[in-house]
Length: 325
Image 1: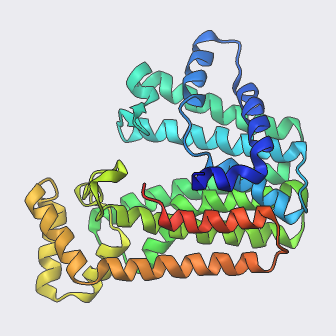
Image 2 (image 1 turned 90 degrees about the horizontal axis):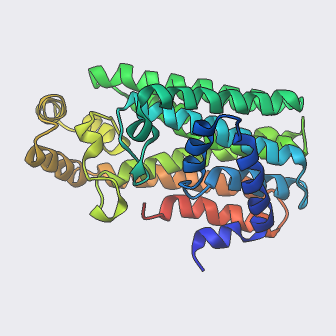
């Protein structure tokens, strides 16, 4: 059995029901909209976000989920999908998970409108059911994701990112969404309980580890679906690179920054930068940091009683840093 199927096993029923509810949540009277949302639903990824929602909800409540849990998972997916559709327009990206993006098939104007539609659908699903606490969790996550993206753009221009700023960027850009899924799972079944904040912290730690793992792929093998050196080509400052910039000589630092600023499209130069980062302990340092976040996340789970849901969450934490893509 694949590890993702193993993780999903204790919530297989909920995930199936969620699929149906999610399709309904997207429905519209406009045929074009339905055609596009159908395309989106049929090309979904691993569905880690709803899995976090249901596993956390069931772990903290001894196996209970409510209608609210399904709505919360749907709202997270609707709003997250909206941000992805808008991201592809912003990045002028023609592909998403190996399939054509919405803007590639239907052009930017329609893609932006689809994003707006999904966003409003998500907001209304919460408002119509008075799930204001869940909506607040999600809205804070969206605000932080936007701030993280803008902070990254601002800092990338100068290439002066410290490790502390890097953590703040990935906390906002990546970790905040996983944190929202976990706190929302807890809030859906046990509103106003200490679990809501505990699970937010748990999700944030997983998100940090997840993003560092993504950074490491930039230096990895070709089998992961993301070209090697793409972060360097896009002048993204990742943890292995930041660590080496902070520990190398002035002369080496000058060469590194010049390479990233002025020679980031030169394949040979990018390969030299990758080799330099590897040889100077950048990858080892990032792996150590990633494992620290992982063990802190696992420590939080230890305070909960044994259950199949807890076991799945432990598997999920390990999968995040052991995955091959």
